[in-house]
Amino acid sequence: MASQKTKIIWITMAVLALAAAAIIASIQFRSPRSWENKRKMMISKYSRMLVAKDPVQRREAVLSLGGVGDKSVIPQLLKALSDEDARVRENALISMRAWGDAAQLEKVEPLLADKDERVRASAVYTFGKLGTKDHLPKIKTFVGDPSVLVREQTMLALGNFKQEAVLTDLFKGTKDEDVLVRRRAIWVLTKYDSPEVIDAIIVALKKDVPMVQGDAAMALGRMKVKKAVPDLIAVLEKSKDVFVRRTTVMALGSINDLRAETVLIKAMGDKESTTQREAALALGRLGTENARKALVPLLKVKDKVVRLAGAHALAEMVTAKDMKIVDQMAGDEDESIREEAANALGRLKTSTSVAKLGKLIYDPAERVRWAAVAGLDAIGNEKAEAVLKKAMDEEKSQWIKRHIENILKRMETQRKTGIKMMRNDMPVPPEDLLRKIQQGEDPGKALKALQAEREKAEKAMKDAKKAAEKKQIKSKPAKKKSKKKNNIRKN
Image (tube, rainbow, N blue to C red):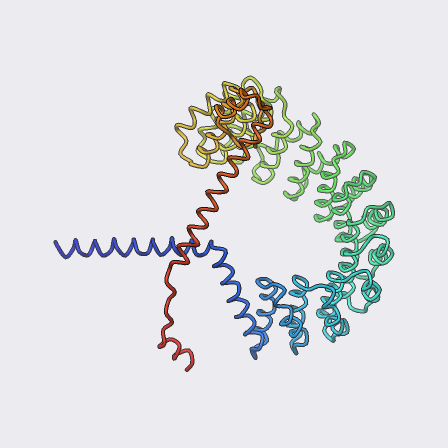
């Protein structure tokens, strides 16, 4: 019996020792000094790997230096530019773009004539990334390079310069014989806003191959070009290509023009679920009565992605007359749909919203409860406050409980002081605010001053905690190196 008790004691001590080790390790990992030391060790490790015979190790090392290094690694990267392995040279250029500047381009220039096309392409893009307007003429010489990859990277490089200096060359790119170059040129053109740019992209939308048409549609959507709506509608009605249809629907959704309503409703019956989803979201942004009627049936479809898109769109556009739709969403078996119902109720703020949110606040899913809390916060009346108080006593999730507590403090401050506070305002003790107001201070300035004091106090607590962690690490004695292990490594 005694031996069994001893065994239990030893097991308990071992578990406690492991827990203590885990806590210390986590503190060390979070320490800035610990990370800095780790980073220096990694730089040292990868610098040694640069002289390895195995080119795979050198490739990994030079790329990793760009990820964990700083400007101090530039000499190693410059040396790697002359490595016999093409992939090492290419990776060195990638890392150079993270830490280099125009001063190092003199060392990069020989690689513009490298026998490996990937290295040449990477060198051109590096010139565009690090170079100045003085380097632009050299970059432009590669617009007509025999290599497709080099021409494609040239388009990307040109995108780092001002519109007037590069548009002519980018327009050439939109007419390149290779699809990859044309696609890249169109995407780079979205950085520049001018009638000529829009016209060039619309031409690509109407006349090019499906892959380029899709990119052109996305570009026009990104730029929100209303002029392109008729052309986008025409392409969507004619094209059978999945990529073109999906991107065109996405573009019309971004532009958000009522002229697209009919064609977007039709796209809800598309064979591809992603296109259906994008059409639903686009109709939700339009917010028309026809769009609402078209979206309701999506709540019963089998595809979960499409159902959720329909629910999200409806949550953004339903009115007080559509409570049956909201009730349908609130009773759905999918927690994501119930969450959207809570969002809708918080936005509507109807006479029945509080009661309905009062049920959702006890939902099994945390995300639904969080959305219900946010909805009650948005409503912000006495009934909503009462529901939140009751729910806080029964809430098991600490983060939701803390959120409710902050909301209630803010509501109390508003009620006692009459000062309207924003939902993201930091809650302050109402008695402190009242005291400042009674002393003759401006209510708004008093509120800001108290919030600043609280932020300062929280920051001081965090700084004190970090200082304690550093002190704990510093006081920990350094481990003595084992001579035996060192001898083994030497052998």
